[in-house]
Length: 320
Image 1 (cartoon, rainbow, N blue to C red):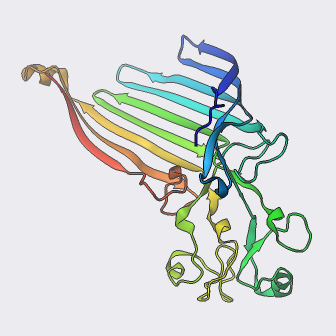
Image 2 (tube, helix red, strand yellow; image 1 turned 90 degrees about the vertical axis):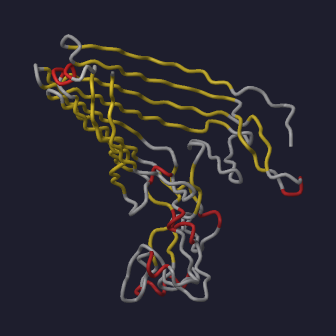
Image 3 (cartoon, rainbow, N blue to C red; image 1 turned 120 degrees about the vertical axis):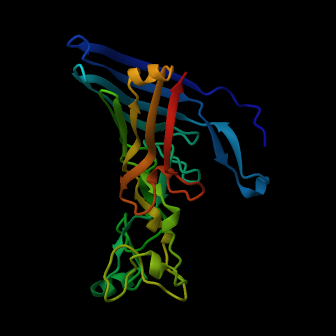
């Protein structure tokens, strides 16, 4: 469905920056603070099924992004045979919806909430699994031990749609990188660490099918002898509620993004072969990731539609 009322999405930015160099630029860098306000956002808005289409692009509301970006470069050691330099980056951004087409009200159907980022997870809040000694309390909510315990947000003694809250956001609180380069005579080594902290992912691989036995091998499920708070009891008849709450996990990670070790053959040897230079190297991309998720790279954002590959390379740079 077209929308003849569409117009440009507009952003205005205020920025204050500082560039600096110290100790004859042995230490240099920049610090930037920004405040970006966007109006007439171009977003897909859900429509009633009676219209015959699922959504339409509209200019909807306003957002605000404020944050700080820091870059630091250092030449740590500089000697005749050995050099070491580093580069550090840090970014913190706070995104929030300031206004919607609904005015000052949240748009629950589209998942947009005033004061929160555009991309959030809105659902019931899992606070554990009902345990055997909580049978009486679980019964008040129509549950039994081994099933998912949901927080009663309004304290009315029952779980309804009004108990759904924003449980997390896909936007990280901060991200940063740390790169180091070492050279010693003909050898060179570079590695880059990257971290993204504070975001949540909706992990497809944590889907729990209560009516099947496949979970027994995949998940730490509840039994009377295994009083875990991770996953509910298997149930051949199905019917376990709130299964979607099991997929929300921390997406924070620290990753060795790449590492390269090289060796440049001596000039004396190159002149003998009448060549300019030869550099041999080995490198690895994404060889190591530390995170809360086992056997899954959270940089994928929870999806299983594409892999985050690791690659290893042996090569040579030859100048004739």
